[in-house]
Image (tube, rainbow, N blue to C red; front, side):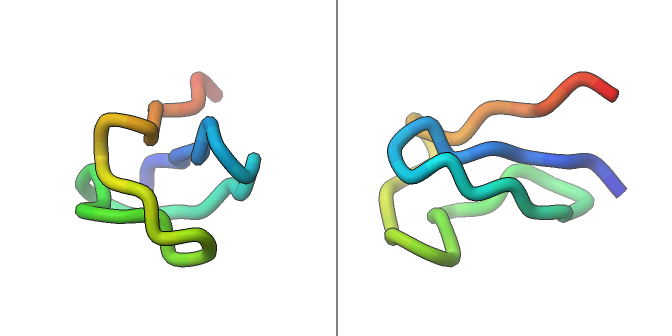
Length: 37
């Protein structure tokens, strides 16, 4: 699993592929970045 971070609300979550939106605040994928382990 990869880790992703929302650059708007700061939420970190796990998913295999880049999410279509933040599960917390709902912003689109352009505001989500992969977190380096």
